[in-house]
Length: 138
Image: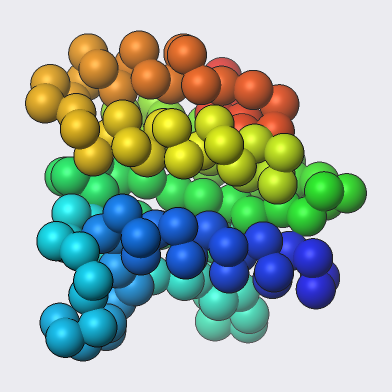
């Protein structure tokens, strides 16, 4: 679990560096123009199972990230929810550390995206890998 938490921290730092800020970030702590927002979902007794770890809105596009350690494995429910997000024209990602560079390219593309659906589908197809898994069919 420690490896997953460390990777999640790395993801959050990257998001902040490109202007995607965590809910509640004070404006004076924003070092670049805001282009997105995200929140951490905490699992537990009162939370629906299988909801991705990070839920984002970037440049008007819904993005979810299920964070996994190098040896982690997505549950069937996590895969199903990720697939449904992609089927709804959002971007759902199951992200492993090996896929971090693909993820960064994807986020930079989402930020630069002008024609959401066409460009997003191209980005999804181009940057899908087993370490940055954009589940489209389940």
